[in-house]
Amino acid sequence: MLVFLHGLGQTPESWTETITQLKSAGPRLCPNLAELLQGKAPDYQSLYQAVSALCSQADGTLDLCGLSLGGVLALQYAIEQPRKVRSLALIAPQYRMPKNLLRVQNLLFRFMPKTAFQSTGFEKESFIRLCGSMMDLDFTSALSAVECPVLVLCGERDSANKKAAVKLTELLPNAEMQEIPGAGHEVNRDAPEKLAGVLSRFCQRMEQGG
Image (cartoon, rainbow, N blue to C red; front, side):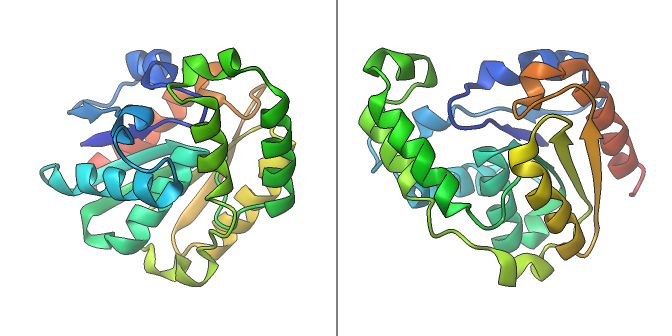
């Protein structure tokens, strides 16, 4: 099963154009991260536990594709459940949270009106709390546990995440990296057709045994 995990501030619909153009067959799952947190504390650990439970209930091995926050969740799941994950596609990933950037983002979020968060599925305070709860995440020492094939992707214009994407590719045992021309951070929105092409080729390789 191919599982798509969207970024913070996105919804499952952010993947629609990419999934529509994806040539790989098979079942697909695209959960709403905000809905997974309903009734739970709005923090990263609660969200990860909800995503982990969802993935663990799925039959067979999984191909996980995550963008930004979704990529962090996918990476942690692959570290903790390596036998469950056949492959990873990580878009604009971070494996060690950039604390200064998160602090600046959270400061900016506090000055934004509540209405700006409505499309994300989160209340303003929950959104800010979730971001703040990621501050100390650091998977550096555990990356060697991820032995499955990993495709690291980054938009050509995503300068904030490119350095981390390059370094993550170097640290993972079985990873390769590609830039998506013309795309910024939200590759699934900026270049869905190009992203679908890259993912289709990667998925075909996995279906053929890597």
